[in-house]
Length: 217
Image (cartoon, rainbow, N blue to C red; front, side, top):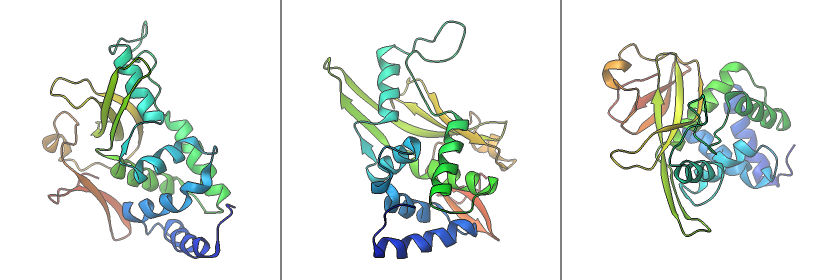
């Protein structure tokens, strides 16, 4: 367990009950990550990355910033025989799942596959439109933003882009499977979710919807 003070223990028990009963949405996960953030230190690097960017939606460092900088430095050149951008390191789904399971295990929070999917959906939704900008040691200017994509294999992706009209999108992380609304190809033909979203629960099931009320998941 983390070394929580008495007030943090009270707050933690609240979030633990919500998580274990699958009663949480992204607003709960935002509070949960802020609560545990200072206790993560060097452990659980991916959870810490998202906790940091949730606390500071405009960042100048971290795993995402490093990936954006590498893509710009390489001019989006791909490695031989692959679609991978040189120097660009996102988060593999297996590594993300291991980190989530590790945090929940350390915190003694019961975790199922549905817990991981719901938790990830909340984190992805919160992360939408977070911004990154820094100056490199060489004086170069790096900037980027995270946006959401969905595909026909039921995966949800976080993609980085420089945010210009002709900017390339690079997949930073993805997870699935989710039950997408069958209308989603008509809502977002390219898979690019081009409007702000939020999670909500209906009859215990976590969903993702646009701010206009269109249900995506």
